[in-house]
Amino acid sequence: MEFTERLNSLSNKIKQQIEVINTEEATKTAFVMPFIHNVLGYDVFDPSEVTPEFVCDVGTKKGEKIDYAIMKDNDVQILIECKKIGEPLNVNHASQLFRYFHVTNARISILTNGQNYKFFTDLDAPNKMDEKPFLEIDLLDIDDNVIPELKKLTKSSFDLESIINAAGELKYVSQIKKILHSQLNNPEDDFVKFFASRVYDGILTQKVRDSFFNLTKKAATQYVNDQVNERLKSAITGITPSVVEAPVEHQQTEEENQKDDSDVVTTLEELEGYHIVKAITRAVLDAPRITHRDTKSYFGILVDDNNRKPLCRLHFNRSQKYIGLFDLEKNETRHPIASIDDIYTFADILKATAELYN
Image (tube, rainbow, N blue to C red):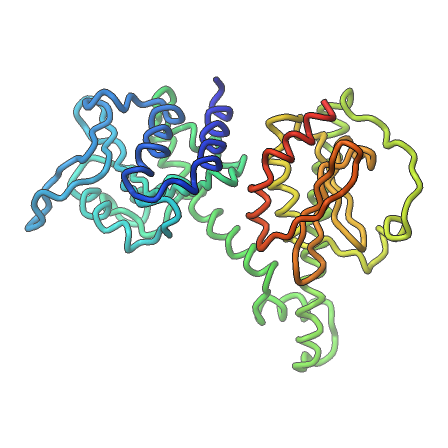
């Protein structure tokens, strides 16, 4: 099984079992050990390779244990500290990792709750674990960009020098992406002023700033949407042209005819929903076949960019969000959702719908 397939397999397992896992020990058994064994490729049944409850006394701290230590030639390579699934991960949860990192030969440490993994090294000061991770991965929302870096940590590909060399760039790119995400969704005053001052010649009064707050959000959303559409077009026309059918002619609604109207703005939330649906259904369909069209009344997710092959519709332009799912006769049923993460609860239905178009 390919590395990405092993990751997706564990991701599916987490989705299926997350509601029944209620303790740290259950989290380790159900999710963390399969990650170490199946994804990273280390033998969890060989204590000389993966040592559970690893003990390393530090100063007056005696008998404390780290959850797992990955070994090579009796030297610690990676330290792993586990928390219960759903528990937030922050620096306060990593106190033991900080202590053990300092007194072992480990250059890599991992803090995880079975779903989220944070990877640390010692970029800021030698032999002292950084407070911020150089790599993060959410197994329920896997970023394709981090997969090659995660693969470097596997037993068959472990290359410490390569990992450390890449860690600095990964760390800062990750932090910049978080800032960009925050600013694009809720731009701060300085961010708005940066753009307003370059396109507006008048005095930046509070009224003007308020206006540019909305304009900046709208421009950011449209830019992201343009980039996504461009990448999808490139993937469809350049990688798998044989699987893409020309859209079947259909009678468009007034909303669809106005798709290019400035009133239709694709939001970041809709794009996030689209990527969740794509992540769920790509196990059934080739990813380039899964496309989207936005209208005034809904955000449609389609197969082969064909309105006669709907996967679902996202109704996010109201206070109560809905996901619209289709039966065999293409009849839509709307289901209320509290957040976009609730889309995962309809994974089986989405996959079954996707199977209809294979």
